[in-house]
Image (cartoon, rainbow, N blue to C red; front, side, top):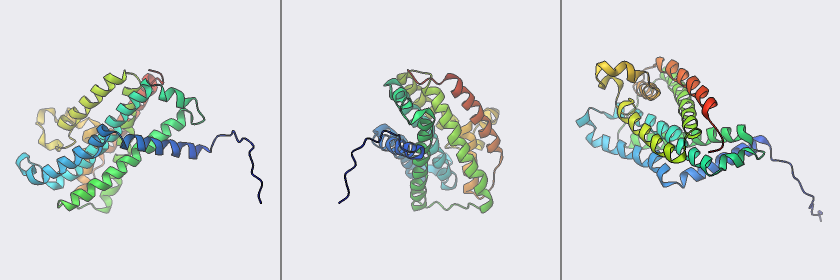
Length: 254
């Protein structure tokens, strides 16, 4: 019989295990939150279904709407959901306490990145299935995949850094209201749901500079099988700018 070893083992788990365990915990917390589920699934699926039957009345076909909803899902999860969750974690001292554990600040941020990337991936898969069931027929070509995937990665990074900048510098209640407001503004005037060409010509240059526009236009072009490269530059600039802002204003304690 093997002797039972009761000696203490105080060492921390490997870094990768710490990060993955933290990410798994965050995913469960997000999925248990009704507001997060509303942003992640209910609203995008609702718009998809409504657009399938009513989209022609507002100039939206499934060819444009389905990729737009994928952009909306990434926008809502990586920015709005992350900002709200992080804001309240900061308010209640969760960030402060976790950053003092072996997980550390870098592990905490890595876990958040994995969390929202995984949730976004699950959203996209589910929404693609719903869109296909509703009659969407994407014409994505092999050449269009590269700029689209790079745009998604850069957009997730930019939105996440923007969320951290907001959540790490404002009170949780302010973050809650402002994140939802920015989300709505992005949907209405950020070329997330409607293509850039549908907006008045006078304001197109301003709207074209937004990161939401870059992601939306990239995915809509991908859905039509057309590679579109200019969004990569826009999203890269936004990612760098928001990263510098987050580094300057983010604090771990509310």
